[in-house]
Length: 200
Image (cartoon, rainbow, N blue to C red; front, side):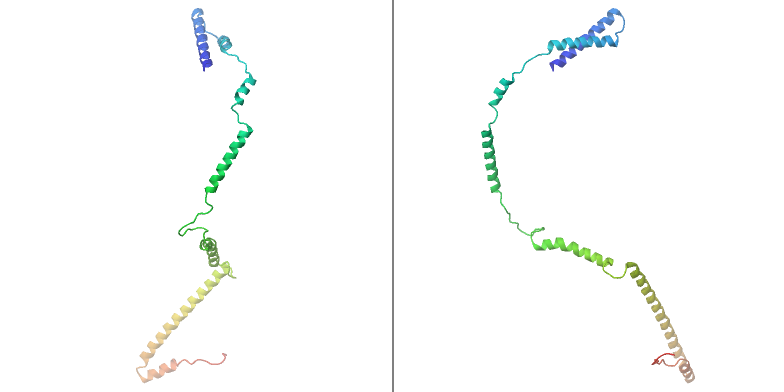
């Protein structure tokens, strides 16, 4: 810290000297002369204030030796520390009783829950996705569309049959008021008889 203050004072003195020179001579100072003056001032300040000393390493080692631990002392400290650590470890219980229902692998129910529920969800998802079926999804959808088309045709035929049956009943009722109309109705609409045997 003192060295820094000395450097600052030397710089201040050199700046004052340069300022005085400019005022006396009436000409500006060059950068080179400024650097020369600063270097000489710093060299003189550092030469005067730099202390020199010599170290006596043998005496320093003798002074420190009394404070260093010996191998026997280190062994005693390690033995004491190990014994204290073993005493603390022996105080820690090996097991602790858990009261109440605890989720985790404390019983077979929780283990079954963790392992079998995801497996069940996976198998159900695969079954719903059609992984286990022999028919591909595209073919299944095509056959399902064909079945829906056939159901629509059957429904249309049933509706047409019901319509004509209703027409026949209403015609039969309107024509059965007289004997002649009943005969005409029976001729035009004979009773249905199921055919037996093969067709021609």
